[in-house]
Image 1 (cartoon, one colour):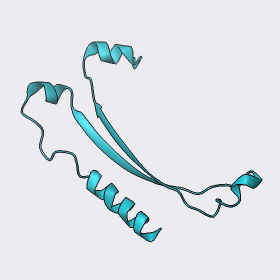
Image 2 (cartoon, helix red, strand yellow):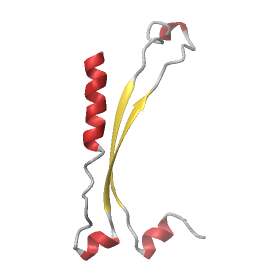
Image 3 (cartoon, helix red, strand yellow):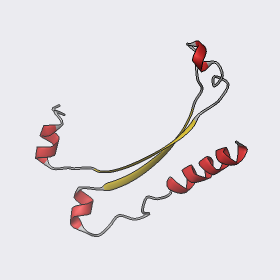
Image 4 (cartoon, helix red, strand yellow):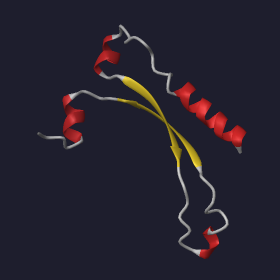
Length: 84
């Protein structure tokens, strides 16, 4: 289990540095930036039923990777209902 936790932490730090260091010169990418984000989740299990008691002593680890593009056009703003 110790090797798995170390690998997960290393994986998290490698993915968190995926973002480019300087913005692109392309005009479209400056208006609609692309992003990559990673997160590491660590938790515990609450044994609220008898079937969960054997695994309640464990601490699950999860890794999340998200990629997206921020749309900055007026129509995109109106579609999200973000009126001030």
